[in-house]
Amino acid sequence: MSDASLDAAKRARYAVWVAFIAAIGGFLFGYDLALTASANRYLVEVFNLSEAGLGFITGCACLGCIPGPFLGAWLCDTIGREKTMMVACGLLALSAIFTALAPSFVVFVIFRMLGGLAVGLCSIASPMYIVEIAPPAQRGKLGVMYQLTIVVGSTIAPLACALCVKLAGNESWRWMFASQMIILVFFFGFLFLLPKSPRWLAQKGRIDEAKEVLVRMNGEEGAEKELAEIKKTLAEDAGKTGGVKELFTPALRYAIFIACLLAFFNSWTGWSGLGGYIPILIEDSAKTGNPVPPVILQLQFAMTYFVMAIITIISMFTVDKLGRKTLWIWGSLLMAIFTAIAGCSYHFAWGVSMTVVTICLCAIPHGLALGPLPWLMMSELFPTRLRGKAAACSTTFLWVLIYTVNQFLPMIKGASVRSIGSEAGLFWVFTAICLFSLYFGCKMIPETAGKTLEDISVTE
Image (cartoon, rainbow, N blue to C red; front, side):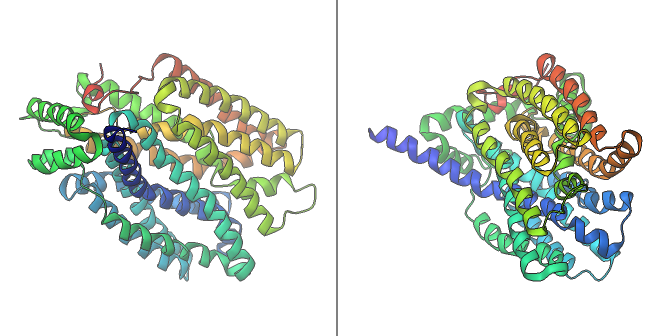
């Protein structure tokens, strides 16, 4: 292998390492939100929750996430992307400690919302950092890494929770939330190893530092080319305000519309809601048979996310080759089919094993496309001067939608049971939405694979 090839391989490994550190924010996101799904069955008893109360306690962290992107966008532009992730670490640590020690429902909710604020900061800072620092040829793969770490975090959480259940019984929910501290310590330390975003440095006039980072990622020739494009874009943007109002000008209105639709279909095609209730959904399918032991329930929960992790790895290595549009179309079609099958499983009482299988099937299209692509593309669609604010708007909208699906899912499920005698109606609602997502993929979603951020920053 030539020296040039060795240097290129070394740069590619470095880019993966840097993206991996930033993507640990996604791990914390997945781990934190999956904890509630594992703890729900205990929280229902501890706080005597109704259907609406269960929806609120599951979604309250998402309420905290809603202001996170706007605060995160301001912090990202002011102190940088990696320092914003450090702030998120501190807030998550406070949330983990005081949620675990919560003496009442009110205290629990307050600190879950604080944790949600931290997750909201990570949800803007981590994907933005990754897409800004990744070489164009690797951007899709490295961008999907954020979704992969969300899934890995969601897979590890029920395994950790199974251990807590075995050791602590009914008080295990406190240990579940406290366990976040282990990951937070490592994440905070790793963040000091990250270089600053070259686009943030260029915006601040620190061109030489920006070039140094780009050379480490792209080599001398690639760095010169990308830096020239960044300078050109900054020159064109000189004098422009970069305010939120500019997002709704004719030139950018379509981009924000696409970003909002990506957020909607990420949340309401099924998994973003189902993921918060998997242990309860499995227990529901066992009502006519023997109850599922708590530890086995957590392991079945982990299995569903393990399937998604495998599929997300496949997505990482296909998103730049097949393109965003192709993956979205297939993801929407498969999710429509699998949610329809899951509804039949409940309606015709096919049993616990089939329920676990169908939920695992629903994990496949989300891991392939409907989960990772919105996080990737919401940071791709906008020019550098507006990326923080645009990503804040679309990510905030996404968190509102995730909250709504978590809040209303138990009520939709209850209404389905009362009207047709099973939970099937919940899944068939998702099937209908997936068909709209399929139309969106065929007719509207833009293709951004293989282009520099400057090439795709303004859509027609």
